[in-house]
Length: 172
Image 1 (cartoon, rainbow, N blue to C red):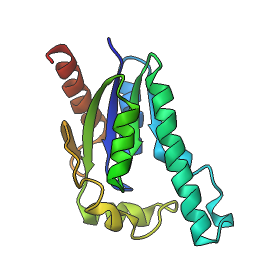
Image 2: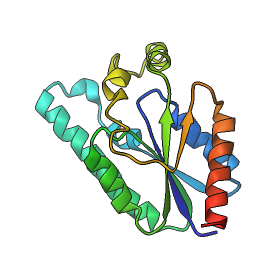
Image 3: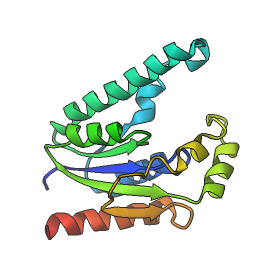
């Protein structure tokens, strides 16, 4: 099968990482999980107190992630991209990096109240992030498929996404 890319876009705490890991487990073939958080979490944020320096570091992490996606897309394996499109430029950079393969844009949605409850229960989340991102991340993005993680288990969501991808690849 020709390698493809599944791009998961949604707010913080929407369940993208769990969904990406479940997609890897259920795909039946090797799938790389490329996560924005891997690159932005390379910094020790508690040691960076200057706001301008924090912005530069965050921008560097995002840019490095997009450049790495290009390298991963040149390889033989499917990719699931775990992203938060806080800016339209990030969606554009992601799609530009993945031009060598068929891309499936997946909207990962969840009601705000559920996002906020998840955010509060996780010590690694900044309070208010999901609410700040809620209206931004999906703006201007057209999806091939959408999933609501408040009503789907990670397994059922992954199965639905994979069925959609495989059907699309077999009947373009």
